[in-house]
Length: 371
Image (spheres, one colour):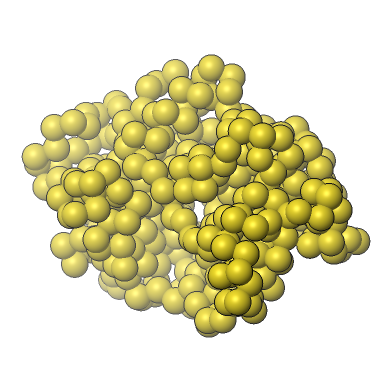
């Protein structure tokens, strides 16, 4: 069958929208008609050349939701008509981490950006007959996607897929960073550096954890205004004020109990470290460019101040459990999702969508497809 998809052929080139040949789902696989896909910065890292991938051409996209059209042999828990959210890390249920409920540390995680499916074969080809890889084994910026059932989470049908897509990455990753990885405590103080689709959900997670002080830092005034709606008690424009000095001022010189870095440059990680109090926790959430290998922090201060510096992926949560849980919080009015979608785009507008992201115009832009 044919599908239109967003494909990258070389770093630092515009994303192309191409007609591709898509295979039918094989054993254990599912064909999904996509309805919505979030414009996550992780895909743009590939475009910018900051995250090497195993091959090009590569179909991008990983934060998606849609409706199941067909299933392959042996698929029993998913059926045609199901509403689903794609998971950018599969839950295989077999490796030691998945068996322990830690599927965010899936054993084959290193293969996610290589291109082929788990069996080493491909489902997409371009008109020249070239195999086209699927980023995160999904390639969700496409009218149709074939993915393994382990990458599929079935959800209830009473949630709009236009917002459900967000819990497949940004919401789970940000909210979980606060709730599961850091375990933000009631009455504590929190700093969030970077207010994109992940950072804004760290703010939500801190609010849900009853943090008393939530400091949101970014260079765009509009994002700082939005952060107040999501639970921030204080804001810092990093182009006008020093993040560390202002955070220390707000916390009466103590620093915050929890600092989250959602931009992931060595400099902003160092700022998060310096703004954290004794016994504080620093969580790095975003993806640094692969070429960055050093963080300018003091190991002596790490020891003397007894700080914890950690990273997190997928919010340290099991997405098969976390995705339905987050959607339940949304239905109860305890989690904002509609407000995260600040602009929608057609597939042909994907380069515009990413330009708007870089310009700070969105919390999350979303590619939508016709029903």
